[in-house]
Length: 267
Image (tube, rainbow, N blue to C red; front, top):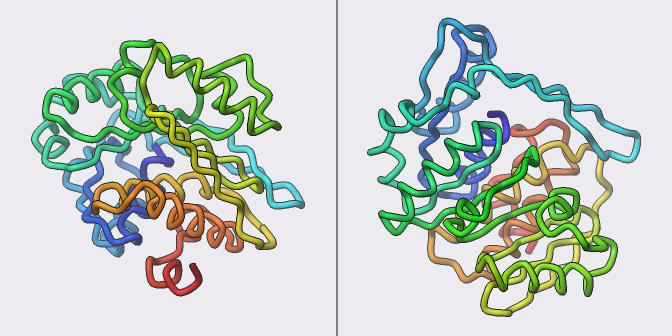
């Protein structure tokens, strides 16, 4: 899906070596994705082309204050099933960190998570667009990165406007499912709640947003790159938080992702 593409670009611009696995249609949209990946030096050999169904698309709707919502039309990305993953298994398991979203079927996410956990890989899940996940799948994930709306679906009885309520609700959730939460709160920053009880709250950087499309994806890609490179949790969060704040000052999704040199120069 498009989120996976945006996150791959973010991880690459953050400095990670990136491979992407997914499915596109044989159409003009696919050509644009492939040209972009070539330019970014992303390994796209795990991307298959389906000549029977078109490339999934998304239409962002941007408000005057820069906030956004997206109308998604899934197509080829929904053909990423277990057989598809078996064909790409070696490429997936060659990675140190595996990042997934919910623009592929839920059962495929679970299948990948099981494969990756057997091989002791670090699994990061961005539960977007939100869909219900079973406990077995969640227990396989190392880091889950929801925004405030997705958090409500996960932990339910939570006032996302109060940091204390988020922390309490997540702690209650973690009693049954030990998973590290990184909650992105838009213009309120980011809140990390580790399964071992450590809480890190980072305030947002002061910027004037013009387009928030892709900000969460920028965060996820930068965070994954930090974890993969051995940075501390705090440093990974700081880099991701700053990169996302820069991205909202630019228009577009993948195009708005800053390069690592831009992020480091202003931290």
